[in-house]
Image (tube, rainbow, N blue to C red; front, side):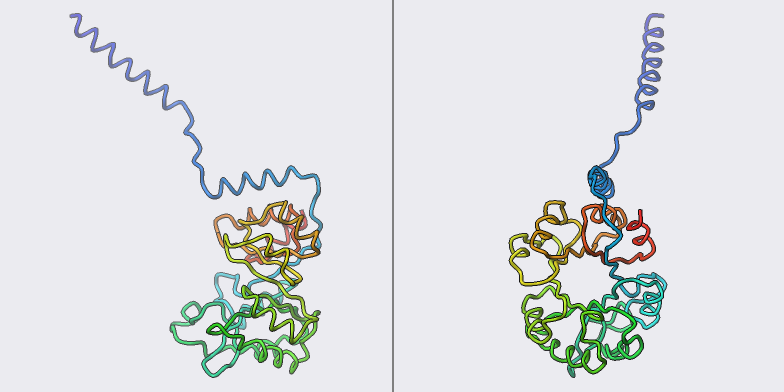
Length: 270
């Protein structure tokens, strides 16, 4: 019957069409990681290769098995022989300085109260002049309250020396206070993610600029270097951090903050 032949032809056509489409490879998806790899490939086209003279700034507690700012985290970081150990400062209600990244303790304890443990002096006593500390200060309720106690504490342990400490902050006001108290210490002005302003950075009276990797371009690196400013890069996206380290190092940045010390060393030595 004609209608049977028509139906059979229709079914055969469906199989042929289905097989045709299945044979085609799926179109690649555009992801954040794919974008970072594309940037890395573009950076690799540069004939200038970065030297191994890049500062490795370690975040204590990079080991996922150890909570950040625990003494064991500092010990592990020290054993890894990095150039600097990053310390984020907090201040207790009674104006005592402690090492803490967050405003509350929920990431390093089971509580969420104001910081009460791990004073900075404990770190200073333990490691003294065996390390270089990259200390991040900030305003306390809008005021420069932690800068003077920090300077006094560093003086007490004979650490107020460019060989042993550097200062960084997202606050110009905080950095200015530190520069007044200790002008010999290197200062780094940090810019939040997507808040980087090249003109502001070029005009800033600081030694280094801290910038999110996503805001780093070869042009920015070159212009900051022309102003004799160092560029220190931090990473906020764990999915792309390792690839982004490769890219910015190829651009010739001066330092990188890292959660994976050994990987960063390998990238630098490539």
